[in-house]
Length: 352
Image (cartoon, rainbow, N blue to C red; front, side, top):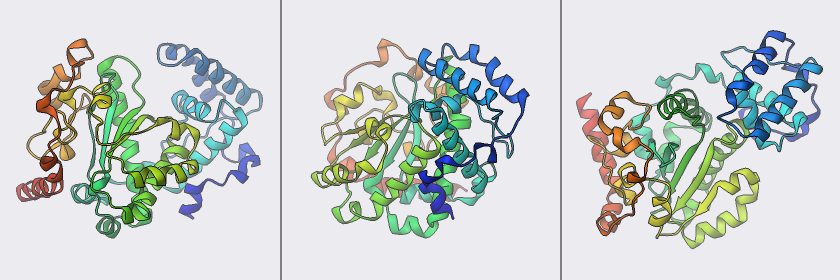
């Protein structure tokens, strides 16, 4: 059943919208009333189409069922409108699918205790780590170091999907609001860096690419417009060929976020991320203590991190500087990442 949920069969587009949406004039009025508060956060086009959408719902007695702690906010509506080219009927259908997904996966009830996050990060090194020059949280993924068979043992298919959902919900409900508050502006997208160094052709052609596909399908269908840019670095010829063949499985919105970079990616990254906020294994200056950047919780959403690194999170010209020769990634350091991650986890577990 869960696979059908993820696949989002478009043939249901003509399903009666009131199957999930219900009448509730108070809720629709609240959406209307809050539009004026969004002027500084969204484009005029977004707000015009949001108003059209809400008017259509009001005129057709369509509203949103708020249950399981799910609120269909204006931000969520704008995301779905934008990803569906402002087609109102298609947006309603996609929101129906989102509500069904939310209920079927019991998104609000996924417990953190379901996952051994430290162990997951050893087999799949990833983290939300600091911010770009514009304040967007940075998602780093070292797919070249993924141990996919070990990961599959602790995260079988359904649990893997729940972990991805849990991770995205944390970004949406915790990291975005706190980062927005710090910068006093709307922050609702992430900047992604996916590193493929060490990824072999055999893994790329099967399990790892499927893993990446599961992630992007969940993002595309249920967390639209959450990715600002997706930089895939250390891309080989094999990956480029695979991507060119398989990229049409994803929407144009997803494809447009992707930048394929080879091994000389520093200049492009430097245009987006200050060296102080970029891990050393990507050529930056950051080496979070005591367990490294993969296991840290560094960013303006963390009060302790704010006290320690306030100057690194300010958006100003002082943070826009070029990498110098001392910041170049040393290949030996790069190849040590897996062992370093394992040592860091062992130290962390010994202290528990």
